[in-house]
Image 1 (cartoon, rainbow, N blue to C red):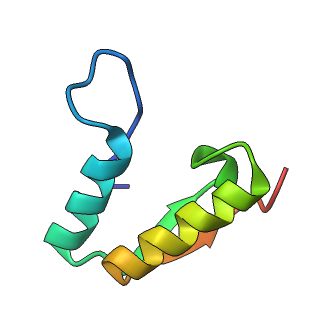
Image 2: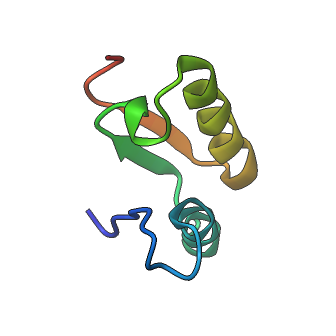
Length: 68
């Protein structure tokens, strides 16, 4: 594991944007997450965020545990 991105009220920039920038900057091709719940709680939004990440960065999202 190289980096962990966490949303927080005290952070100046959203973790999602920071993660996208890091994926692009480092040419990351694979992202592993325990579940899509780490992106959002609603299933439709989970898939939308997954597709956005893959489209924006060219990285593939790998889900380890599946859906809740």
